Length: 66
Image 1 (cartoon, rainbow, N blue to C red):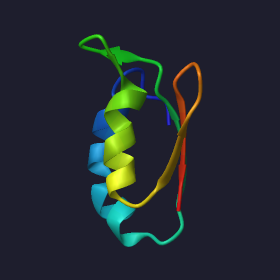
Image 2: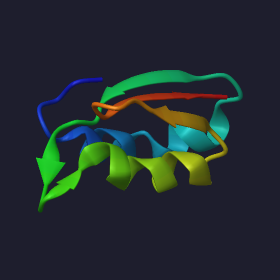
Image 3: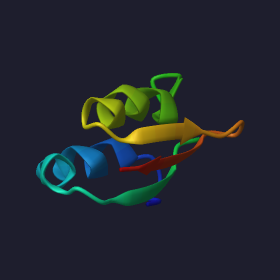
């Protein structure tokens, strides 16, 4: 998912899907910044909260799955 800095809103819009899906895989461009904080740092706890395994790369790319 790449939406040029609005990835947090994209994930927010799919919270019901994240809660109800048993298998899901996400690749998210998390290197954009919002208020001096990388999107990957904003999304890590949100994705983890939905029981996804989350890996953040050195540049901020996010892989998440369950």
